[in-house]
Image (cartoon, rainbow, N blue to C red; front, side):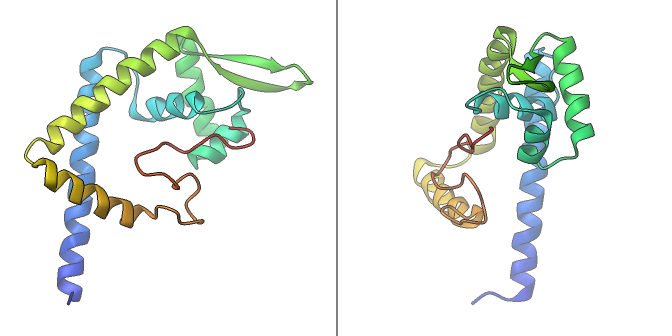
Amino acid sequence: MTTPDSDGLLAEQLLRLTRRVHRIQKRHLQQSGLGVTPAQSRLLRTLAHCDAPPRMADLAARLEVVPRAVTTLVDGLEASGKVRRAPDPTNRRVIRIELTDDGRAALRELQGAKRSAAEEILDPLTDLERQVLSGLLDALVGVGDPAEPGRGAPHAERPPGPNC
């Protein structure tokens, strides 16, 4: 039986783990030398899962941020050659965001940095403990929960939607 105190302790442990994961991922990103921020990394991963180049508004909705934040992220990634703005072929007023070859290469390096960070975090755990943790995390993030789009398969990024 859980108590409010034990639930509070679990919540605090989860928050501390989340902060640790972010710190380690940020360090690995910095060590990669790509000059990509965690937010830019997330945008690149999102672009990689799109069926077709999305509009800025689609990216903002997908990332759950305001459109201005996406503009800032795209500006930085475009300046470094990782994405490009392209006019929509059916509506010249619409701008789409495309991943470049440099962006795809950066994604491969970022995935390596992400794996290294995960290995560092999970290193103290046995294989069995990792399996148990995976099952527990799946239960907590709402696998199969219709309120969590794209959470139908464990350990997967969100699948592409109609626009992205």
